[in-house]
Image 1 (spheres, rainbow, N blue to C red):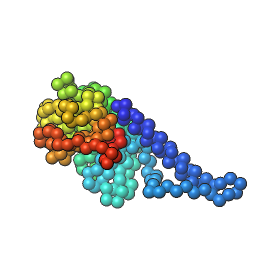
Image 2 (tube, rainbow, N blue to C red):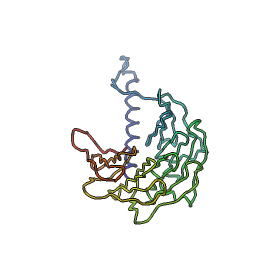
Image 3 (spheres, helix red, strand yellow):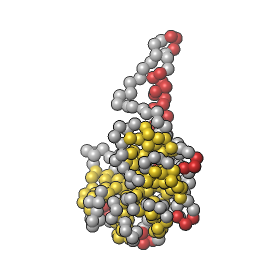
Image 4 (cartoon, helix red, strand yellow):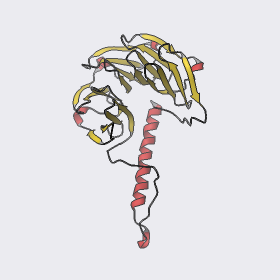
Length: 275
């Protein structure tokens, strides 16, 4: 959670710096001098209301961006990158939206400060429902993943994972307890068969069965080189874990959880990889 806060502050600082450069480039010089120009090579600034964008998800048709700083969600066309919608209605319950996942039918947004999950229609961007309440055990939810059947929410402060029905949003179960070894779980990914949870505080990865939510295994051996793992993704064959403090990426076999390799070194230029 601390690293996510620091990344958010860094994003704000970057936005402020860019705004200052643009303003400086447009300001006229003193004493009637010609307007100053400042070269910004390869930089394109879109006026689409991005504010601390913290998470992004594509379903192949739409591109969804969660803006933690702006309490909003921006929808873009995946093919043209054109703006489709900016969603910031009060009724949507967006409150530090820190993670987003689309399965092509539903868009799920985890609101870290609101201890809630917002569901949007992937077709229209319209609000479907806001899920909150003690039964869900949402506690600073900072990661979310939908495989179209299940929705998995990692609760960073609760050291738990909440499973939802992707069709109805109904609560299925909450996984918590020492056997799961959840420790500041800050990233989660489901490929429909396996669910992988990166534990930033425990330098480990927990695997769950996507069908039942049952514990499969906890990976934590030194050979994995997990070091503040802050992002995880699976394609059903491979699992990729980004180690923020280790400046490395660990690859796992999705079937067995066995280590495939650890990528690190100056040639990769990894620097606090967090997504």
